[in-house]
Image (tube, rainbow over all chains, first blue to last red):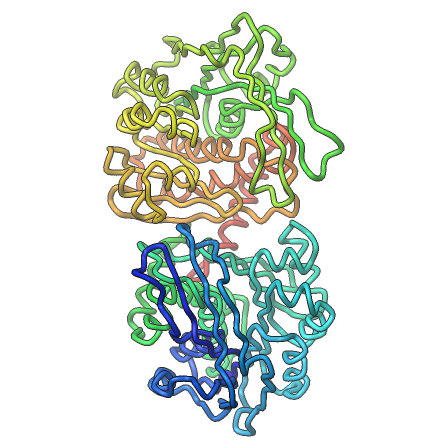
Length: 311
Length: 311
């Protein structure tokens, strides 16, 4: 089976309180983090655009993880660049600059070979594009998921609503769930989003973990991994999505119908992959993982959260 | 067995975005919330001071729950009053006024009948008083715990350190753990606090739950209960402490040595009692609970957090 991701490949400039000066033009973007994280669970097909100034050597990062780049376009012009500065607690950051470059006119093209992908992730993109890709793929994928952000809630709310109507899973940050639904209550926000059609809502809470709500009324929570040191939280949310959807894709491969238990474990794998992403700049930690690293962290999550019965 | 609490009994004025005007002079204070929450687990002995303007009818709240008031002093002067205003997300609040009144010259006196209390909670107080009470009780209590706040970390840091050296358990809010330890890493902050002598640190994260660190290196996390509606989060932290220490006291009653499993469940009971506190103004919800309400919420916590094995 395979997971299709449509998103950005960026060149990030990151400043943190603990780094010696900024890290310049390091690999970033939603599709990069998602693809690397998901690649530990299933095959990944990537649709994105890079500029003609993108360093070819960085593409090796994807090839080493056997991520399919058939859907990667190279356009004339500058690559998408983003600069951010983190503060002491890493829960807040300032955007220093956003240069969309060729990503500003990104027109996703899904290669025929990708059309059999069972799981699709519409990463944070202009909602009109998310809707268009969802319509193009139709009902073929077993699971369609999207992420979004405050910018689109403000500027393209109706289009975002149409995109949400077309997916099975919404993954969104806590503040954005509240903003979109117009209520401080996450339970109420979850109901409003799930009423639009998705069966599952994942609310990402950064260093506090994540919540899972289902249209059937189920609720589940996974904490964040208690990292000794956060080096760079950029991409943690997309890595979370990669672990979450990656595990679900792996389960679908077994031929099983997905049960609530699968979604629970998927949330934990999301939290695990998000935690690894924070351990180093760019995707460095996501390049060097082993199956044992992931399994060991999963066992830690069991002991960190179970209080009754066996652990 | 019994739990001794030394803390405040306040008259609070609370404004929230959803209430019709402020609630004036409602029962508050750390000892009130703690005692009510703990009373569902074990006998509670209360040491506090009220002013001569304190409405006697409010004391019925404690008597109904069979909380022992032998240690309650009435002093000439005004009662401790605090006013606060909450914002939309309830995670931040402004203090509108603090009138210490008779609480400003509180000199705790421990009645002889209280000296056999196995569990002692030194609620948020001037750290010199916490230290004095800890010295007075000596090694007799099986468990001694304290809470503190930013004000004392700023103004009485050395005294707070001396108080921390004398307890088994520190319960403290996340920002205050970071502030006291001078590090953004909660793991590093936990080590620094536990190096002073306590065997257990509970880090309270408000609407995100709580973390447990032990001197032996164990870690555990409990989420907050996903409330449909928060009416008033005042006292949630002290109610958390009441559930946490209440459950441990109940376990000690069985003659058992406390194991890590007990502390894990205690953290969940803390989160449960904190969640009930938020459901209504003042201690209203903590007055009307049944054992079934608490047991039902405990079962919900199992399903909300367990992802492998049985739930």
